[in-house]
Amino acid sequence: MTAESFGADGWLSTGDVVEREPDGHLVLKARKKEMYIQGGFNVYPAEAEAVLATHPGVALAAGIGVPDQIYGEVGHYFVLAHPDAQLDPVELRKWCEERLASYKVPSVVQVVTELPLTPAGKVAKAELRQRLESGAAT
Image 1 (cartoon, rainbow, N blue to C red):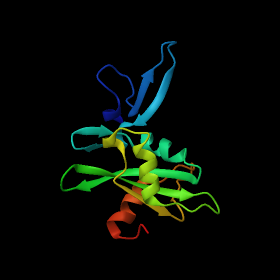
Image 2 (image 1 turned 90 degrees about the vertical axis):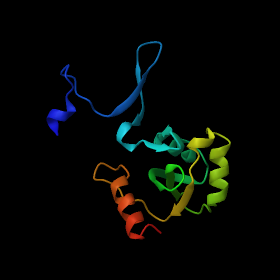
Image 3 (image 1 turned 45 degrees about the vertical axis):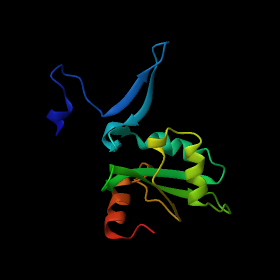
Image 4 (image 1 turned 45 degrees about the horizontal axis):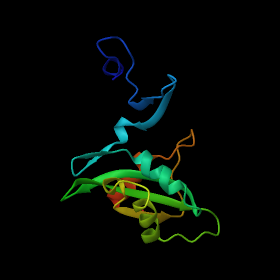
């Protein structure tokens, strides 16, 4: 796997999607391995996660692509509420519809009481996927 991470030019391929600013700075936009393809469009969960995180009641959001009969894959997003906040998945989808292109809007928004974290404090998306597959993502 290490050899696969280095291209023919010897540069390390991290899988990060970046954009160069006019001043030369690089801005991290997403992780390539988290991208899913919905109806032929590339969707990076980080975009919808950032929009969901701007909602006043959302403490944390995480999204993954899941199989879909029509679109190939669609976004399934998990949101954790701030203490004492009441979140409505329909309202959260509307929040996203007002701020994202239609193909980036989550198909499913699921409010959860906890999100699995890695030792580094990031959301363990592989565990979210396993929970969905096993039916234990409630």
